[in-house]
Length: 84
Image 1 (cartoon, rainbow, N blue to C red):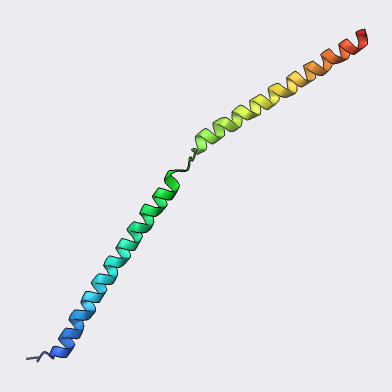
Image 2 (image 1 turned 30 degrees about the vertical axis):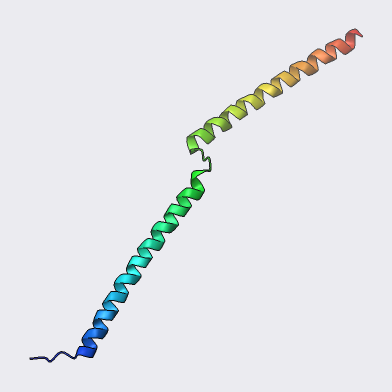
């Protein structure tokens, strides 16, 4: 039969309590960090990759149309300069 030393038993109880407290504090810190990050990032407007690619394609098409219109304008200006 093993005799139980009360000092060691008390030390083990305190160590177990401290471990539980530290684990709880860690969980609480994680939750607080998540909440603050969600709050900070919640106000930002992010777009999805699909939306970004769609707008990028639209900009490319618009750029091509501008180049075509610039060429037509240059041709019309050249015709007008010849008549004057």
